[in-house]
Amino acid sequence: MKQKIISLKQKKLKTKPNLVDYEKTYPRFEWQEAEKELDWFPQKKLNAAYNAIDRQAKGSRKNKVALYWEGENGEKEKYTFAELNQLSNKFGNVLKKLGVKRGERVFFFLPRVPELYLGFLGTLKIGAIAGTLFSAFGHQALLDRLKNSGAKVVVTNKELYQRVVKIEKQLPELEKVLLIDAEANKKGKFGLSELILKASDKLNCARMSPSDAAFMLYTSGTTGKPKGVVHCHQAILLEHMTAKWVLDLKEGDVYWVTADPGWVTGIGYGILGNWSNGASSLVYEGRFDPGKWYQLIQDYRVTVWYTAPTAIRMLAAKDSKIVEKYDLSSLRHLASVGEPLNPEAIYWGLKAFGLPFHDNWWQTETGGILIANYPCLPIKPGSMGKPVPGVKAAIINDKGRKLGINKIGNLAIKPPWPSMMKKVWRRPKKYKSYFIKGLARQASTELSRMSERGAKRRVEWYISGDLAYKDKYGYFWFVGRADDVIKTAGERVGPFEVESALVSHPSVAEAAVIGKPDPIRGEIIKAFIALKPLQRGSENLKKAIQTFVKRELAGHAYPREIEFVEKLPKTRSGKIVRRLLKAKELGLPTGDVSTLEEF
Ligand code: ATP
Ligand code: MG
Image (cartoon, rainbow, N blue to C red; front, side, top):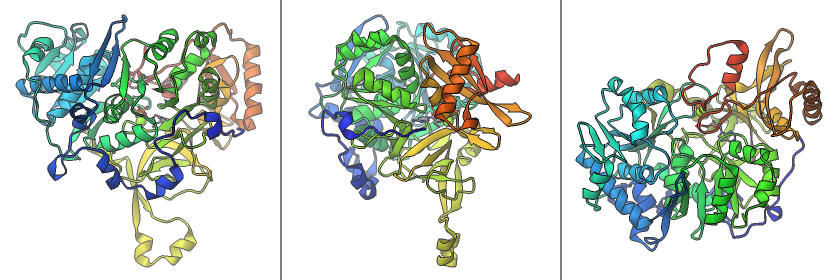
């Protein structure tokens, strides 16, 4: 596709970015240097929650609002850093009273209410491991996760508890249930408010080693059974630096990440990295709703907004007049994560808000943003940007050899980085499978120049499971998940470029493509398309869309089959699940569907 660039001038930067010069910073940066940005206890101990909250509460930000909370029914609350500190201390003391020890798992099964945030922090403060769950999970999804994690405590509310009741007997390690809205304490069930009232607000934060576990959560389940990923306290180092560089958080900002803490984005940049930078953060309990979302930006004067492609596409598909009804002039920086961001979504952002969305790439396993577009760099729409300073990314083949410019291969990261996962819970083999050892150098001339010993030197890589390529300017371009790549007539086609071409058609809201077995071509491309409101699917429209894509892409990369659908199957974190479309198309078992929205 034709490549466009959004220059710095077009970006209309309202303030000087935190990362002023990427090209100068990248080669010089050392994590050791960045460690100074955190508060450490003696003997190199730390606590992620202490860095997010306590140090602000002890300093000049103590009376600054940390959390603006708006409930589903319009209830409003706000908490300063000092208040969040006290409440999380109290929560930590409640857990201690219930006998929770270091390393034990405390899981939160709650909507986005203040108790989820202060509880998460309180858990980290006593050295226990906090786990998060989407409140929309059904009992099977709950059972899988609570059983696998061996959670000792579940924190929930009376309504959601009805789902836990159904599976409690199958959870021998679950000892206690904390209900945030119940009064009485009875056999294994505790009312949180009463305990919080009685608990002391003084707590000595547990002094943890950087590699001690802090939190765990399950991957989105886009490609298969979700993995229980465990992260360490030192993850906050990368989360802190990237919240500063990529989200560009500054003292006067009102920051809104739309992600739920059931998804890693809602932890790394909804609890830890945002608060460690002292940013006033908005949490909205309710669901996606274009009018309401714009209203929130207007009412809270949101300046930095971090959201996901699915939300952007859904906002863009809505009547564009809605956006004009609100005063969104407070916005100064927009970012997106979770799925590839179609160029069309960036152009729409420019039209609607006068600002481009800055795409960034990472995974549950990586614990923080690793590749990003920065305020200080031009954006190439469709590219994920460049590696974060301190992170080495490369495109390698299956043997671990680096590939050249513009060559498609595995997107790989050189381990370790501060927020690299510690383990996959109870699945050591799975953890190991992420890493391969490859040759250090690739060019044969270089190899022959190297000494015998040098030639045998091997480098370890973390394999992301995504395919990408790097252009000559060092920008990384997402092609697709390794599982989703289509082989048609001998050519490899990444779903992303076809989907991006499809969504740039004026009638198309969202699109997903799969490879469908074909006797002649190996596979053909089949597209599932959700149309914009008021658009009707017809054979003529199919033809028009096919012609449109042919104009944008190489001849073989157009969808020979198109099916119009009401909506696409998505995970709770808003990712399109192509494997489900494929399974349904081929009449195969649908696999793990525990994380899916109703479909
Ligand atoms: P599972 O691992 O259970 O299949 P998942 O991979 O969707 O689920 P996450 O860890 O939430 O779970 O998502 C990480 C994946 O999301 C990445 O591997 C990548 O495929 C996709 N992704 C995230 N950000 C981007 C981005 N900016 N561009 C393209 N893809 C992205
Ligand atoms: Mg994954």
